[in-house]
Image (cartoon, rainbow, N blue to C red; front, side):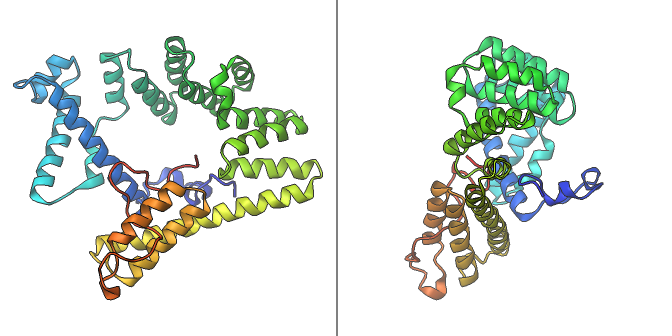
Length: 332
């Protein structure tokens, strides 16, 4: 199975079904929901007092009333939940505006490139590729040196299968973009497709140099090295690829165990402590040292009461402080 395919993606027909979130996906969604709620409360605070209801906000921001109503309901609901000690977490995400709401936000402030980037990704996800392309082209006109915009643009062209346009775009990419791993991975893909294997290997090596713990880059380079007859190099790359994938599996299993402990209110137990150790170890195995340290710090806080409960539990892992990465994001 290709490294970035999930089990759900690999089973024919499953993509048509509404699948329940796993424990790890639920935890990620809850963290996103809390961050979004904070941002929405900040947005509402910028609206003059007396105009913070849905109808008045709609007139002030020139947005559809239904969109404003969802914003007010979501942010207001999160405040009530916080004050009452009840946190709905990811449930609040279903109240937020979808792609249509994003379109209205972009229409209200067309100069906001980050909003346009987000909308372009959303449009691509729902099959509106032409609209996504127009949005990204506009972003490039307004900020032609922004590496993140370029990465989105190059990735979009690749996803659309517009390989001729991708090749031309790679040639025109400004110097800062040429220091990004995505740029070199896409160069490698084009070279590999044209059977320019030496060029493909050089490009993939550069991608791996910039992002050494990305499983996809290691996988592609190992394939090319094998085709070039470099068995030893390919074997070493496959070993790294396997180690990262094994760590990813261990991370999900340990995170699910710890998530269940959190839901059951049993975080100060030897089982939860072992899960935290495993999470931190898996993060280190994937090269996520910052995340490993963050989990370590929480493990110190969540020392099991059976071991004394004093917070002196060693140095391995736990749930992340506010604003930290979850440790389950795509490779850096």
